[in-house]
Image 1 (tube, rainbow, N blue to C red):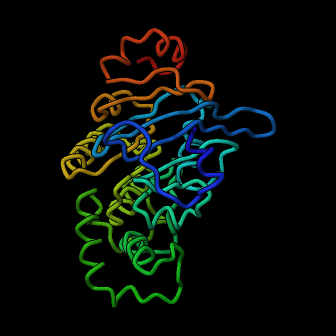
Image 2: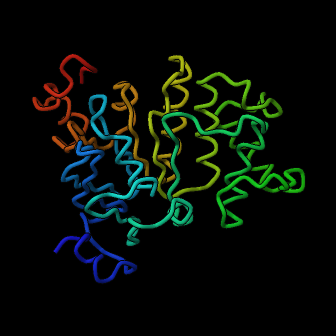
Image 3: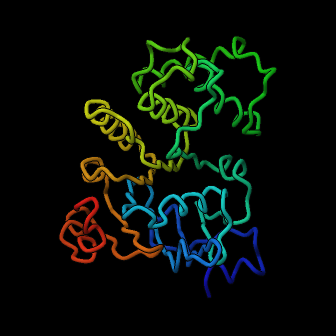
Length: 271
């Protein structure tokens, strides 16, 4: 019996499914839009502490899969389980409270707030149990979170811009800002949708170094990325999506030599 079938009778119970040491288990997930199959029969396990990359051609369903994981989309069938908790059917803020944070493909920052305030906001919202902007929040009184936000800003290279408003940032800097907004939440699972998109090569390499340091701290990460330099620098294991289906999974070395992967990338990013 699948997790999805178990949920019909006991939707709130925990599950111990998936491979040993898996912290995220995606079970038989399907999602369609107006008859088009964005995801079909997707099964995927992410192990505790690993960096798991999801790659594939444009339109393969990668971002859709992350949207299902964080509750932005409800699958037509199947389930997502994190650390024994069924995420399917939960609201995004409930999933966030369980320890899952996401960095989006298009940076979602608050343009009228300063960079420091943007970094502080997720920590304040998570502490208060509501992930939303409170216009009456007095950031100046939150000294402990402010101090931590300054440290996180330094780790991503934004310490010299703390008082600037996010509206004035370049796309690459907004990527780093949203990464900081994810890190300050201390997630057990961090989902990153193209974290280096729009960055110059030296900024990309700095982000790779930062994510390697995070790996040393034991945080589990799932990364969607088109830049194969980033993927092969960071990934412990890789899953390949094409046409909404997982066509290959394995180590970077195994994926490089997989003929199905080479065929799926024909005319696009070469693996």
